[in-house]
Length: 424
Image 1: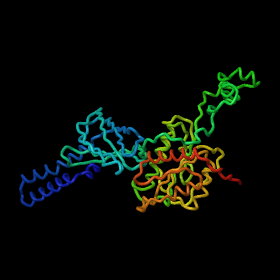
Image 2: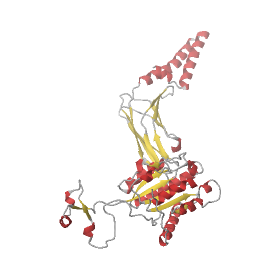
Image 3: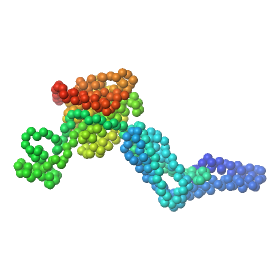
Image 4: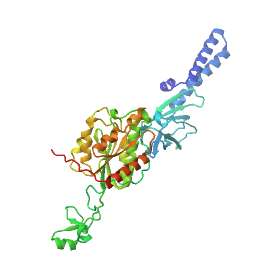
């Protein structure tokens, strides 16, 4: 009852004040009829508060978001399944789901006629132009009487995540180079001599299925040999994104960082659908959630897009080089750079040396800052052996990718200078 009295609305408090005033006036003026009116006006909100306070309800909520991974600018559908497991009916329910402001306005619903075993499903859509990871919920429930005199609040604690990934565009097919670098049993190769049977088997390893033993080759070699065509080989690619705050210009969705993230997402989707196992590396090092995995393209794209959805600008001046100390190198490296300064050149040189093929998309940060286009980044990358193309504020990523393909084709037809050898 105490909680119900504290939930009196403005209308309920007005009724109480009017009833008390009528009672006082009836005593002062000695009007018995006014006394009955005052008692009735005071009793109405009190009785309503008692009824609402004794009303026992047990609401169950199941919230689902479809899909939980959505691209920026695309809608997602939220479904709310409500069930009343209480034994007594309720009054009117006012439902309000807590939604981050970037996803739109908070949805509100009015539900009436709730009884024992009542079920209802409501849906609404959310949409965000900003990438990121968001939590939808919790839901607040306000129980009110038909007269609007008392209102009690409840809240569900459960939330559902929604990840908004960067916008992507379909990129055209271009010669990448370094496509057959990496590790695997079924790596395509030219047969200089011998038969295909000689190059599609390998030595037996502990744990191999005995049904894959190739007995003819085992008899020739003198030890167990197994077929290796059933283990598909997958190329590896490193996607590097420079997310230093000092390397980008602008703020919000119109900044050069957002353009770089969108370009990296488009490249990640393109490479995974071309059969590459892609890992993401930023200015702070390799992202563990998007490390190299041998799996299908659709399964590999999800972790990459989720990692890119939460990438933020980092306040550091130097690029992390810890990931360059790994032993497995020589694959394809595709980088999206912002502003390139002189202290970055040694790192760029190391990245190019340890890559079988090095491609770069240079974001023209000077153009984002309002100045004229500057070819400084592409010149610096070319001096370090990178094949690059410029991405400006008004450039389409698919056209930039096509230009990068033409640059790669011209470089492959020309005579490349031998790369310097790094020792130490």
